[in-house]
Structures are given as structure tokens and as C-alpha cells.
Length: 178
Image 1 (cartoon, one colour):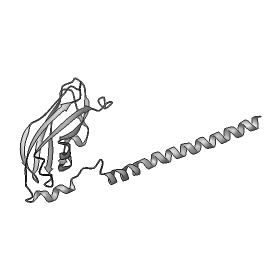
Image 2 (tube, one colour):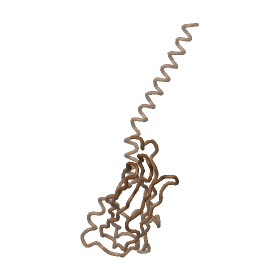
Image 3 (tube, one colour):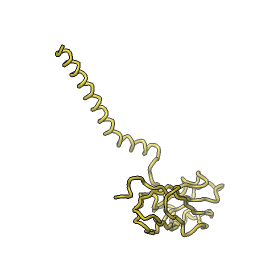
Image 4 (cartoon, helix red, strand yellow):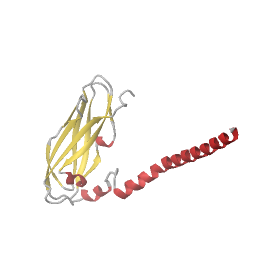
């Protein structure tokens, strides 16, 4: 009886070891698989390469741009663009500054997520520098200014004459106490 129980346990141990190895292999392969998927679909990439040819005399159509922001409900931050409205030309480099204040009495970390109206305009706004590229840490009461540097691609369809670039700011949970 003990011998049969021992062989059953040995078979179970082998199965569990194989499952653990397969899980480890899958987890190890996720990073390269993610990279391949992102390259194939264009996800999680910053399109900066297209901006360089635009700077030399490629300016074209005039676009009305509005800048806005919103903060996650309950997040004690004040976020505002220092310029709310601009007329820009496609192909020209533009800089707009945003001011963010942590109005709380504790250290907080946040992340900005851009959104565009109309949504189709998003693929034609090429950001070169943006506070949305990484998480931002603020001490209690701290105010910071951040540039957003971008160019509107001259290939943008002519039927898009106005663009709203707005940022939604969210707290990054578990990061404030670092």
C-alpha cells in the first residue's frame, strides 16, 4: 500500500513540476511576445521619427487647438493648461505648458492619459515631450509646470480643422508612500 501511494505521489510530483516549468517558460516568453505584438500593431510606441522631416518648410493648414484637463474624482490635484486655445499650422513645433498642483497633505503619484477630439486626430498629433510619458510624483502642496511639445502632421485630413487635446489625470495606487 505504501509503495502504491509513493508511486502516486511521485507521478503527482512530476506533473506539478512540468506544470511549474511550463508556467515559468510562458512567463519568461511574455516579454518578447509583448514586444512582437506591440511592434506588429504599433501599440505602446511614441511616433517621433515622423516629426523630423516636418520642420523644414512643411507648415501648411491652420488648425484650431483647444487644451483641457480633468482630474480623477476625489484626486486633490489642480491641473490646467497655461494656454487654453491656439491656432497652429501643420508641420510646426508647438509647446504648451500645463501646471499641476498637489493640493493634498500627502505625497502622491499620478499619471496623465491624453485624449483627442475628434479621436481620429490623435494619430496626427506627434508628441515629442509630454508629462504623460511617465508617472509624476508630487510632494504635499507642490506645484510643477510641464511642457507638452508636439507637431501636427501635415498629412492630417483637411476635414479636421479643430483638435482638442485633453489630459485625464489619475492617481497611481500604492506609489504615494515611497
